[in-house]
Amino acid sequence: MQTDSITITGTAQREAWQRRVLPPVEVIASGIHSVPVVFPENPMRYTLSYVLLDGDECVVVDPGFDSDEGHRQLLDALARLDVGPGEISGIVATHFHTDHLGMAARLARDSGAWIALGENERRNITAFEDAQEESALDQARMRSWGVPEDRVAEAAMSPQGLLDMRMLPDPDRRLGDGDTLAVAGRNWRIMETPGHTPGHICLWDDDGDLVLSGDHVLPRISPNVSLEIRGDADPLRHNIESLQRIAGNDHYEVCPAHEYRFRGVGLRARALEDHIAERSREVLEVLGKGAPTVHEVACQLTWSRGWESLGRLQFRLALSETAAHIRYLATSGLHAGVPGLVAVP
Image (cartoon, rainbow, N blue to C red; front, side):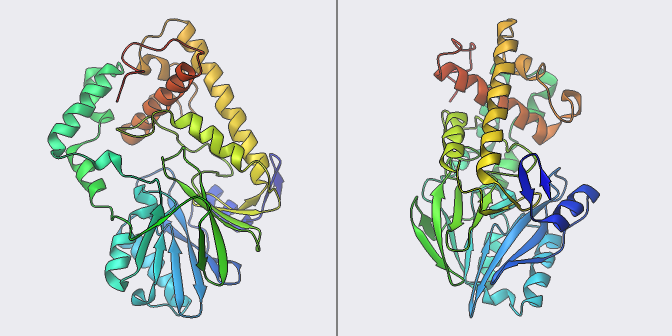
């Protein structure tokens, strides 16, 4: 199926996405299976995990959010592949977000599996001593971004949310740019693709013309790129560079962590880069009207669900995405900066 210059290969996945139901478990290629794992109370609805099998070896890529329902979904799919919960040998997460790394600790505890993350995926957001103090600092950050007082607590990380993120496991293995991971009879080439997170990675099967793209490239939506606590100082710039790294290879089948499979990774990467450029122009136009804070800029931008509908996490992501664009414009010399923004830690 051809749409927007890409060719959709996961037609059943796309139909399920449109119907707002879970897609089926599918065999993508010999030894490679996609398994949907529910992501509760989130617009993304589920993560597409990938089970890589070869003989006695079973590696799960992006096992998904840790919930009892999602755990059952993954174990049921593994059972149909004659794999028990204790037979998982390895777990790879393309990045540290809870809908990717979340279930890794539970799976590793039951199986003894190793856990791998990208070489530069450091969980700086959890580098705190006191969650209450850290939350208060983040609230001060939101105030500096111009968030109205009655929404500061909604936008900031809560103490419990920070503690939950600290529960994510540390890796046993690190995968660096250009490393090869021999799994399921294939040699997966690791490519660092910072932007969505500082240490995001993609896994390329060059012989099979497949790429597990995590959240770096999705077929329909633009992945969130945020200015975060102690994170990348210029995440949008690095995201653009990462998109440019994958601008070829349109014959590869892209296996993303959300939505559905497709071909045309270079076309999609260029479309995402065009979207970033258009958004930056929109931000620059709003700044030109004299909007002095991140919040005042954000509320004048175009949002697919509408600004008024954004609450809680989506509200925070909209703010931090706007901040990332302003930081990019400032470091590009296109805008002198907004008071209280460029120096934000």
